[in-house]
Length: 230
Image 1 (cartoon, rainbow, N blue to C red):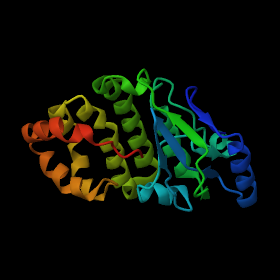
Image 2: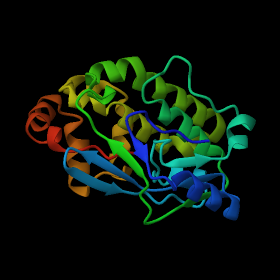
Image 3: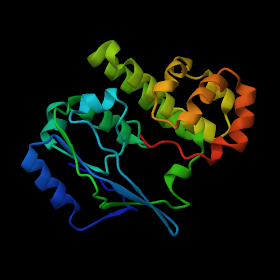
Image 4: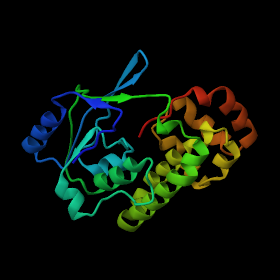
């Protein structure tokens, strides 16, 4: 099982290559790299996951995308991992996190970039950040936190906080800094553990307690920063 967004494209050998690797290694999930096309620019990205899905989650080394993954169909059907019916934006996240929770073996095809992500001005990702958060991301985070807490307990606390932190980042993109500061404040305590540039971690942790200063900083600096794509 895999997924390709309708405005993206893949190299002709992508799915065959990933399938053959899955058969060879008996992997539950096979991942690869991708190329983001934005006008004349092309950025290559790859995230090498741990050998098991749970290890990738706990280390916060995972991407939310389904497009760079080939997933064993039985893993999905046996564990009833289907998109939440009332969340039709960012649904990759709620499937990927649960897939990784149950995946006993994960293989990454390194130095292989067959997926082509096309960034366009009319993309759904250009939707106002507040709307993205309130209609989709907040619900997704709450359900994933409930799932991880029920099935994994305290050892997934940092993972839960990171998902909350990631899901509320659209608020910063809309300059809703006070709402960002006051939403899921418990996730700020673990900012130093998140896969963010080191220069941002302490700064963000301190500014989470000072909405006015964060608003100024966000206006002039954070809006230029491309959030880490988990």
